[in-house]
Image (cartoon, rainbow, N blue to C red):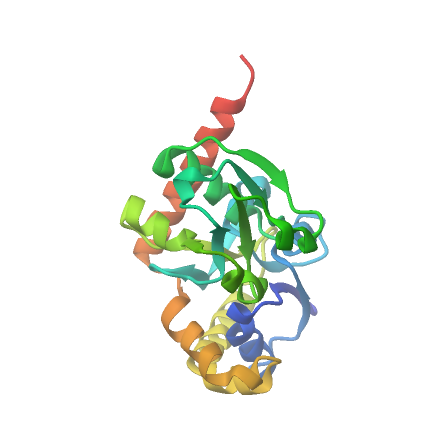
Length: 256
């Protein structure tokens, strides 16, 4: 095939992947499309990308979706960048405002609320992040990505969702996987695996080249300690469980 269109997320946790795509000594012949997680899913759904790093929750929605690489974005405990921020303990939260940039995180917090924390909060979409500065006492805010660092010090409680999932299931949590919608040449997938491996092996260089270079040590620590990139057996098991829970929630919510 010709130029491969690859959609990826423009967050700190993906910069090793982006670095590998740009710098590995492999002729991938790729056009790189960077955006928020939800848009990455839309790009492959609408045929604007051949391969995409998409939120885990979106996999069942994409017809003929195939997980195509040995890499993912996951955490085996604290992830730091997917959190529920509040001024009261999580079981006292009465309303949760949702960051819509990641549908996977929205599904995760709903599952944890119902099954693990045993709460039934009111759900609201965050339309203006400035409203976080005037949060009500029993409000909670689901925030993802780099913006967590901007707001985490403004709240008394920071509930890490990946850590909560780990406590609940004893499994890691998979936030995003590489998916192809239509059949992509196996040689292209092999090359993509190679460049992703290169990027993961060169995290320091990836940080130095990125907009996060000014916070090099913190960024490298995050990529080393909080993010897990290999899509191994435990993560595959965790993804299956998560998708099963999403399906169960949808079935229970269906009328009749």
